[in-house]
Length: 181
Ligand SMILES: [Zn+2]
Image 1 (cartoon, rainbow, N blue to C red):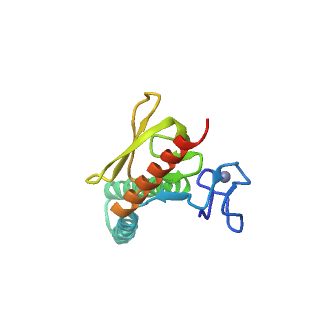
Image 2: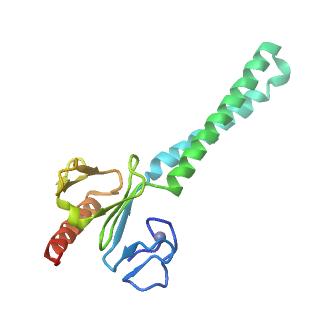
C-alpha cells in the first residue's frame, strides 16, 4: 500500500487500495511498494561538517580587527567561498529529497527514477526476467525486445529489501505472461 504517489508525490491516503493516482493517473494496487533509500549518515556528517566549519569561521572572524588588510581580504574571500559551498550542498540535499531516487513495483510495470533515469515507466510485458546480485544488491532487468539490461541499485536499504523487490518483480513478470494479450 502506498502513502504517496511515486510519480507526482500526491498523497494517496484515504483512497482505495487498488486505484489510480487522482493527480497523474499512475495505477497501483495493494501489493504495490516503493523502494527508496537516502543514506542518513551522509546527511548527518554533512550537517556536522557545516556546524563545525561555521564555528571555525566565527573564531577566525573574531580576530578581524587585529590583522593586516591582506589577511582581512583573504578572510572575506574564504567566508564567501564557504557559504557558497554550503548553499550548493544545501541545494543538492534539497533536490535529493524532492526527487529522490526510487523504484515502485506497480500493477502495470515499474516506475523508475534513478540518477540517470528521470521517471521512466517499464511495462511488465516488456521484461523477460529479473536477475539479482546478492553481493552488490543490484537487481538487473532483462528485456524481451533486446534493449540493454537495466541495473537497479542504490534504492535498497538492506539485502532483504532488495530480495523482496526481486521476488515481487519476478511474480509480476509471471502474472503478466499469463494474461491474455
Ligand atoms: Zn501521481
